[in-house]
Length: 342
Image (tube, rainbow, N blue to C red):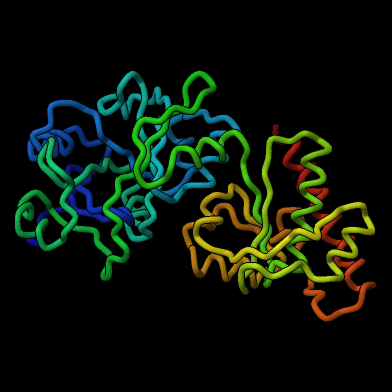
């Protein structure tokens, strides 16, 4: 690609993490006009504004309620675009009915560029208006290279799924679907109505089941609009450990039907808050899924302390009782904290 002089009105090729796009500073009317001309676009629909962090919404005085905030924490960075009301005049030229679609891209390089630019960027697919998006880099360079002043692309582009983001809108206390693509709307709607908390330990047979069933008890007693589940890194289908089952039973909780679930991208994506038993578990999730950093904490960290929950596997019932008490204390603190956010 030919090197051009880079300025705030430049147009560039980028990769969001799932698709190639043509982009520019969201503040540059000149660059946006150029993109419209290149694509032969006639209106402002289809624009997505990319930001690197949820805190950037405050730059535009965007007010979001708790339920919306949880959805953003759950799916950002990711393939979800959210239409929000914006009164900031800097974005008036790309707003429709005073609303703009925002997203945090999964591509780390692109997020770093936005931070360096210190401006949100406008992103749209590489194609002529009315045509399918072009998702072959070779084809883009062969047919559209003259569109771009420069490119922001990772050295190795992984797992291009060729699916645009799902677009939703919050209006009048309701969640509305604009476009369903990468993420099923039914999943988003369920998460909005009843956010999910995920507890994680090594095998999902000792510590995380205790946390899960204690949380379920609180949710039932307090009639909270929340869901809870647990997972581990070992295997699916293992029974709860005998001593974990015993200590729960001693406290009036039946967990005999529990079987382990393997930690994976799907149950991570479906959860608004992920609580691990140790820092090692947290770091393993972040190593596998670095984009989930905004919603993954250790159990102790979210309860405002810093100790790990030691693995009781192979220990006697007295050790399990101490583990139960430690988890119970922290789960209680956490759910009091969550209830205080309502």
